[in-house]
Length: 112
Image 1 (cartoon, rainbow, N blue to C red):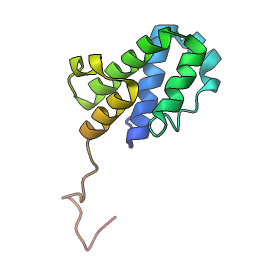
Image 2: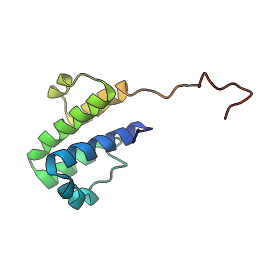
Image 3: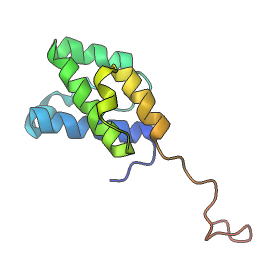
Image 4: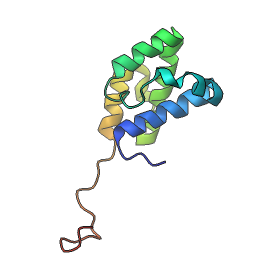
């Protein structure tokens, strides 16, 4: 799955990391707690929910999710060591590739 938006990339990073750390069956059992559509827009809410569900372990989960996300956008991962989840998301969003304004293969006479 190639993410088409930053929100999708964040969701993909969360799913990938949580499945890897918790195991896919455990993640499937608890993922209904998390609204994957708002993680990128409401990182404080996501972090607070992780805190409620996992306690102090949530810090590790946030860092690992951040590392996965930064890796997907090609950012240096050591930069994440001093950042909180919200800051990591900002850094990743700054590195996220923008959609091209136009496709050189298309012309004005054939826009589709």
